[in-house]
Every structure is written in C-alpha cells, then in structure tokens.
Length: 221
Image (cartoon, rainbow, N blue to C red; front, side, top):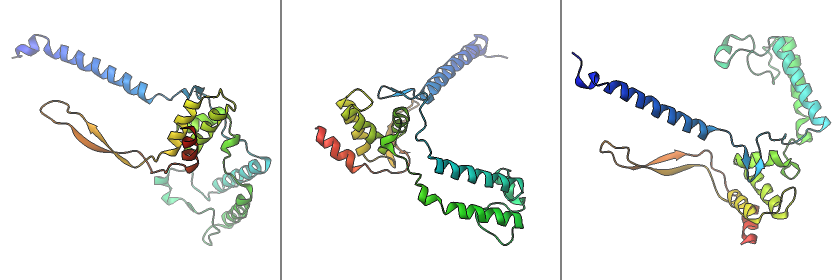
C-alpha cells in the first residue's frame, strides 16, 4: 500500500525540487569555474604568447623534438601511457647513453646529451619587462608575483596602459604579500543540529612576497 505522502505526489514534488536545486548548483559551479576574460581592465580572453624565441632557441627545440621523434620511431621510448610502459624495450632514460640499449638508441641518447650542453648558453628565462601586455596580465591573474610586480610598474608609469595608481597599489600589494600554504576557513552549520567549524584549506605551495613590490608599495603610501 502506498503512503499518503506518495499518493499526494510528495515524491514527485521532492524530485522536481531536487532537480531544480541541482540545476542551480550546476550553473553556479560552471559560472565559478569559467575562465576569467579580463584582469585589471585588460582583456585576457586571448593572451598573446609570453615571449618569442630567438632563432637559436627555436633551433634548439626543433633539434630536440626531431631527436625525440627518432627515438620513439626506433622504439627507444614508449608511446604508451606510463602505467602500460613497463614492457617497453627501453622505457625512460633516453637522455642517458645506457649500455643496455640498442645501438641506435645509444646514438640518439648521446646526441640528446650533447644538445643539452647548449641549453645554459641559450638562457630560456622569461623577461617580464618585455612581455606583451595581455600575456603579462594573464600571468598576473594566475598568481605570478613577478608578473604582478611588472604590471603594477606599468600602471604606475602609464606604460602601455592608462596610468592608474590604485591598480598599481593593488598589484604591488598582491606581489608583496606571502601566499600559499594552509589557511583556516570557517564553515558555517548546515542544519540538522550541526555547528559551524574551522577547516584547513590547502592553497598551494608557499610563495614569499617580493621585496621590490614591498618597496614600491611603500613609495605609493
């Protein structure tokens, strides 16, 4: 025998309410996870490349990719996922001239090792001062303190953007502050006689504030 609740359509109403709440929550989650399209008034929906490689740097990567392609074609490295690569004939280690590898693999490994000797001279560090504005803003929005500092300088000096001391101050503040690590957040009660509590939240690796950003922030006070 069906209960009065079932006969009265209670289950149907509860189901419709549950589905409606789920739709609202899904919309909120999707909105919260949507990628930002601007930062400090700068359009970052299509950020420019962070930097352009020099001909020597581009040549290095072309040669490296060619050697890795040759190694994979020769069976020196596996194209399978990591958890399936245990039966590969050579597996990882193509960067080292392993005596147990076939001759072709040892030759490719030696060429890769010689190529790596050129890397320090090519200096692959980013130059934030020369970075395009949209790429710089995108990195600053992502939490890069060096990018936040450089973007703050541009707003302070009006270089490539309209001069805005308030935005410069905010950016210097972000770049100067320590971030990451574990923080404690208050979680309110959810009903059913529960009480609120403080829970730990991991916000990523710890990053110290930049001394230059602190100095510039103090100069604006």
